[in-house]
Image 1 (cartoon, one colour):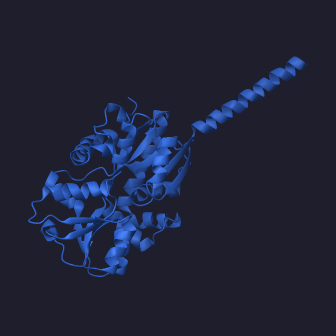
Image 2: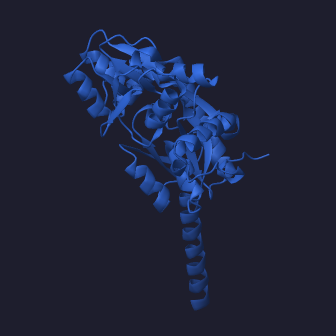
Length: 315
């Protein structure tokens, strides 16, 4: 009898262990920064497909600090982050993540109440910018470095894109760097704004359509099947953002993204949301990283990421 009870107990423990392993193996903890990256996956977050056996826990956060903490603590299986931020952390050698896909391709604009039709209009002017030593600053400085000004513009940095918008509201003659969806917030409150699309300027000076601004990083330990299924969901979500921005704006509002629906409807088309696998994005990404190495190599630890940086799909 004792032997039977002991065997039954072992069997029960085995079932519990298997159940825990199954639960852990089929739950993806995902962290996404608010803004264009969250809009890229809003359709998926709202729908959360029931057709596969994976549970998705999605955490939308503000600011870069939670992303850095997620990389460092390995608390999340999937991290949406600026591509250069991921490269810097992975190049440190201690972060077990791989770049799996690009999802946003530039959402930066120079904005002013005064005429702003081309880079010529920046000659001798002061620009209020945010994100020093991060992606917006990289793009702005890279473009300014390409142009031959009589008097190079002066850059004054503020702490956030919201503060930059506040500077413009206080003085509409200022030239400020903004990003979507904050730019669309400004347009709701201010008339006759002039907007210079920095993605168009990037294409003019580099010949590249745009730059992989933010991407998806996945933990090394995830199975390729789980990653590929998840990426397929995000690809569909990006497609819906482009085909039906009104629906995705409705979903984002329902998910409490912090912006009213009219702002999001206007912001989505200017957020340049596009899905590209790691392999598809690699050429443009390395070109972007090379520009970073020219400006400030410390931002990606002084080197291009190697092959191990990129997620490889199953054969």
